[in-house]
Length: 132
Image (cartoon, rainbow, N blue to C red; front, side, top):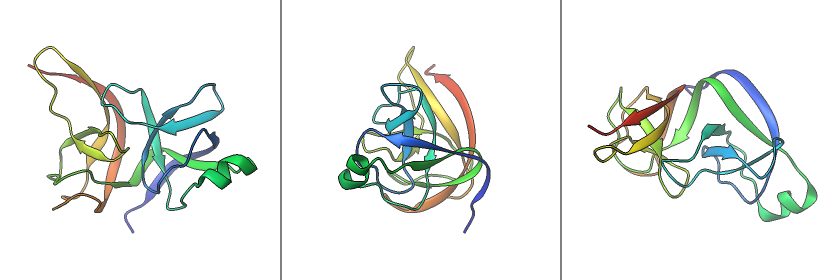
């Protein structure tokens, strides 16, 4: 609904990935894996197509949105305009690093989410945030 992607690239998934998840590079340059930590070097979001273990076995590809506005699955309540990182399930959450800790930022929330698993638009913008 809010999708306004600028760049999409196909990769080989290393494991099953749910739709609208944050991903990172996998074991090599042509693969992606689910991002599961705020320190992961995140690259983009999967689209609305679920990748199953069977898809991985068959060699099916996953499209990853690398630029523009992508849809993302929230991991908790989110306020519009918040800088976002990733939780342990590949969902976006508000970045709130501890003092001196660094987290990877995947983008900015373009809409609020009232609870986990809502799909929200995210303006993709990579950076690092350090806790004060």
